[in-house]
Length: 121
Image 1 (tube, rainbow, N blue to C red):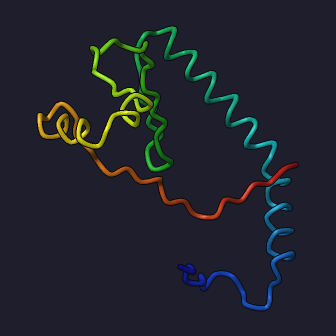
Image 2 (image 1 turned 30 degrees about the vertical axis):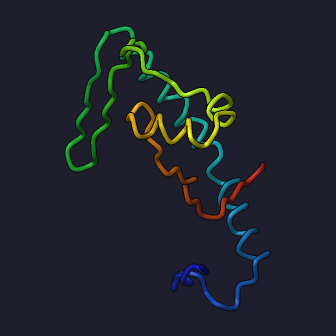
């Protein structure tokens, strides 16, 4: 299904012209993006060191919130269906396990995704 064209893109611009504008902007902001990542790592380090998160409020300018990290936690064990074994069972045996509510069949879907754009500098 085609996406609706956004009004912010002037119609006469070619695909190449739009891509070049994007590349020019990425080149322009690359140093700032790198510095932002570095500053975020510094704040994560400070949060880890303090053992807690924090919020820095700069009034109308905005806020910076750092949430505390946490170690992974064991939540318990769950039964997992061995797909290869399941597929080798006869249809009758599969139906029996479903009827006994030992196996529940659910539909799975891949996530929809928009076209991706990657800029390499």
